[in-house]
Image 1: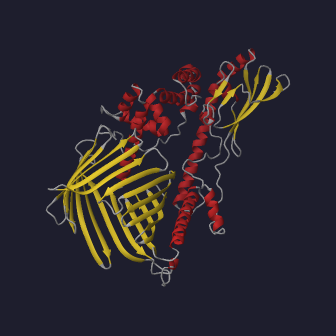
Image 2: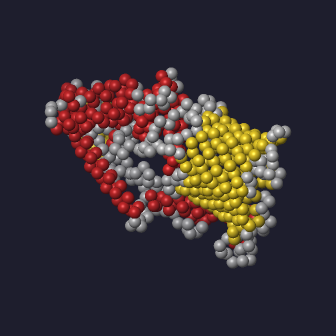
Image 3: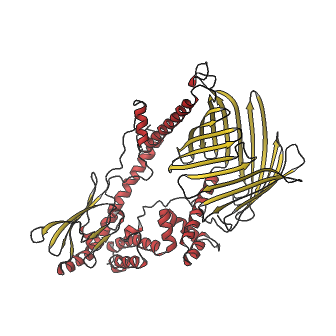
Amino acid sequence: MSDDDDHDVPQDDATTRPTEQVKDPYGVLNLATHATLDDIQRSYKHLSRAFHPDKQPPGLKREEAQTAFVDFKVAHDILIDPVLRQAYDDHGHYGVYFVKRSMNSTEENSTFKRLVRLHKVGRKQDARQVLDEAIQYNEYEVMLSEIDVSGSIEVKCSMLHTSFLNEGTEAMGVPEVEKTSMSFSVGTSHGDGKSKWSTSFGASSNVRNGEAGGSGSISVQYNPVQGTDVSMDVDVGEDAKVSISTSRVLSSRTLVNTGISTLPGSDKLALSLSSHRPLFQNKVRGTWAIGMSSPDFSLHYGLLSFTTLNTRPRYTAKINIGVDKYPLRLTADHNFSDIHSGQLSYGWGTSGVEISGIMSRVVSKYAKFSIGVKHVTISGLTWLLKFRSGQLTFSVPIAVSSITSPGYSFKCLYMTFLSLLIDEAIGDLISEANSGLVDDGGEESKVALMREEAQLVEMNKARADAKQQVGLMKRPAELKRATEEKKNGLVILRATYEVEGGDVLNVTDQLQFWVTNSSLNLPSTSKSNMLGFYDVRRIPPQDDIVAPAISGWRRILSWFTWGLIDLPPAITKGPDPTLTVRYKFQDSVYEIRVLDDDPLSLPSPFALKLGDSRYVE
């Protein structure tokens, strides 16, 4: 984010999605996503002639027209505005909602005003990036405002003395705890939460072999202007020190950090400087850092890092001196889905090699579970377990095999395989719970029931709205049908929109309404978004329900374990609706069927000819 970025959307409702049922504006206006401004205006005028309330008689008809008119007026206003249209294309109705909230800001550099300026000079890609960053940063701030406590607990364990993996002679049981480390921080804001000052208090402790140590800290942050932060930290305890640092986001989206601190047990001062910025047209993020001590300015550490931003996987290369014991580190991060990711890391140093692999899976809104393995040349194999909820982290690294143990390579493969199985099993449990297969009769089942009832209410409202819209479309459709009959043009004889196990909707008048100059064109969007249509499935599928995917390697795992790891039953989303149209064109009758998201152009060369219109209806 640049230093003139504003975050003028209030945090308490900026990420709240609109609750009303909002249709796709392209579907409402019967337009393709690449529609031009002329196409948008033409469709809007066509609908206005039929639905404008002022053209309806007083009473119920006018009220029904008013309801329909609002739908396509909202759709028109979104698509006619380049800023709102791009926001919808990239982020859906939430993007439109976010930008509209920004319209109320009096700031000269508000998100909306910046987007308008960029679109005026044709910098659409820059506008897209500004909006993406504004939304991401705002949601990040919302998360931080909801969770103001951070902390971590690490319990380092060992199973080298047990019979697990044939390492020791003792019976398997609870791993032996070698070291426990804890740290926490609590942040407070001054005044009404909009103050430029904030304070945080923290403490850390560790216990190893019966010996304990600890320290405390206090940090004061000051945010004089947007994009600039100044902080002072005081650490007391074993490694007491005082540090002052500043961070500044420049207009080139470069983040610069500077700092000065005392050194524990020394009268010298440590100086640090770092910078982070995008490179090569935002394809790579570069970071460099350097630390020195006064008065001789001797080098304490140095770091150079590059991370790809637009690749899958995302690669990171780090070269450092004095940061850790591995001067060279290469990392690959890959997101398999929005809730599932993996990381491979390779570190090289004079003391040997470190190789680690870890899988992470989102288990709730702010919670994530990670599992993996780490091989270190000088120590051996460690099993990595971590759970994170918000800014609270609990990790348990367990030493399971020494490097000198017989069959070490096989043990590495075994633990990797076991970690993958556990990760997959957790994924199955989450999918089953989201799909309603896990029902404990408790609060979650009540929420699911309430959600289903809300869907039924929305569906009944959608049916009623569609019926009203068809009533207003019927008269224009009859006039068009009569005109097309006279010139032997395109006449819709019968059209149905249906799905197996759902409703069968007669859409003959709806399609005839859109016939222009003996042709009909429907875009490649769901027909349920069009006026006079609705979702004919009994219970529309929910976006947040994810059916468990059974990949090829998952099947191999099931076979490899002789069926001990059972495959979950396939959960299908259900069939998509279809549109079947029988029409007459130039004395012949044709019929065609398309899927819900398929485009349709009539007359069509792919339609089945049923015969002469004198003999076939």
